[in-house]
Length: 337
Image (cartoon, rainbow, N blue to C red; front, side):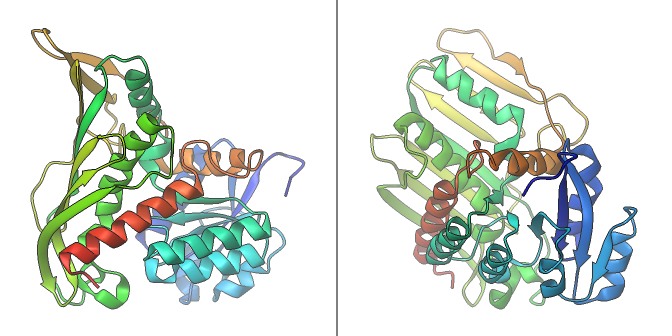
């Protein structure tokens, strides 16, 4: 699809908090404009569509997908619905930016990716940190050999919230559990580094052992995993919804290490993103500053640019499938459903 003004008309499926955050940042993108919002609650859809002149509201998803003025769709629904909605978007010929995790299982992810490819539409998982200048700077540090050969990754994505059985985070029917909600970030990061070092963005752990805790039947509230990748790179990944862990990452190499204090939302608080590089023999870390880009705006522009190649440069559909397959193994080890 191509517009004479070069802009992408976005439809949004869902009108919850994450959908509102996405819509608020569409103006921060280079190419996006809000065209439509759909929700089973038409009043909420109208309220969200009302922030942009000319945007329309629908009380069901099918009507939005039938709208010829929508070029691309942002899926903001709960992740158990992602696989079906990706298929629906693909059949409608809409490019797709789907909130993380891409699906609930690796099998679903593979089917979803195949559906998008068969329809000739772009499918991008909204793993926002992957589209940030900071992540590209991390890659360049490793490529320049500034820490030598990477040998280990330690990464955490966790937060603490009260246990409420009705909350989606603790509801198995809603795809609850820390591993799916934020552990996908930690696994994605470890796999990203392994992919850079191996030259294979679909690389998966050759070995994975894990432990954790279940908050209720089949729903993990904290979990850890030890990974070994082909070629010998190891990783420790941690996640939780009821554990006060730091949100940070560190990549260790044969000649130093690189610490990333804010791997997931760099610059979102208005500060300048920074990396801490420590080489063997240094008295202390060197601060490497990075640029930042609007979190959702960068995703929007990445999807629109991906039309030229069929996939986003920062993260391919193969990469997303491999992360989901790895999450399957992590969840199975911990006992999540």
